[in-house]
Length: 247
Length: 176
Image 1 (cartoon, rainbow over the protein chains, first blue to last red):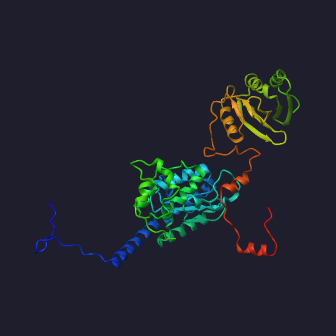
Image 2: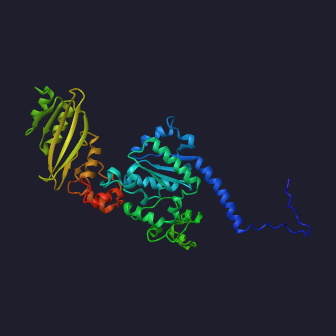
Image 3: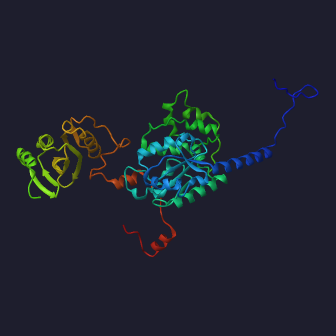
């Protein structure tokens, strides 16, 4: 059965009512609010643990403290997860895997750093093999203090993150696209300039309309040699109209 | 320990210049010359039932400019640990593999090569093992300044909360 298109008396198709900009932004706001509210109530935590915080998660997730009351449950694949927990120190080797994982997660994505190790190296402050500040390599939404934090503190952190997502304040994932050049530069300082991931971050930034003048730069130029017709990388990214960076 | 098990005593008699010392009820510390070690391990494995090489450890002796390699062997029959110590000069830092006697030695040698830079001739695989991202010198060497490296490579967050500023204003400071 074919769908009938209503025709006006003069035979012309009806025009769509133009939506005024204030109205459009109001609708967007309403929908964003609903979406944020829903997001904050169903967080999937990636089943990935480093360091000693891993041992605090079983009680936090299972029946003792039961994160599922808050809508938080573990998820086994990064592509379906919203929340990445960095539960302790990261060696340089682990950091590589964390970045690969983080880039595979779908936006919006959130990162929580556990304990002092993710803030300033913690007890590994003078180690040659561990990363000192996590926020140099991936954007972090919040830290939970402690060495390690107890499950109560973890729950409290989850609640605070949910509140921030609900209010639309947990937007660190956008920083990664906006300042990709800087993050990539810090990663290259550890892994060498041949470091590249399968994820086309610049194309994603383009998709989310988050390209700024700091998305591409001297560090993303090194990605050019890995560009293919499947991967945008920086050359094409630079052609895309950029937004002014808002600090 | 009063007396060595007969099988062990027979093995130790075969190798010249050994010093055997008991360091516990079931522990023997054996000091050997580097060139005699493969023969000693072969005898221990075949004649005394020491089938298990549990670890090879390495010590960097700064004062004498030597690496000390320690081969820890365990016998499930005698239930006694034998640690064979040898010293090799730090330059050129080469030794021979015992992979042909104990297969797991390949892992330990690869690890020691990575952490101390000792080259084991004949070892099947000495490519980077754990530190695949590492470009610097072997990090376990005493001459490697870990803290300085960490300070130069990584940035630290400045930590000066109000309570610390107050203490510092009165002439106090952190004591490490």
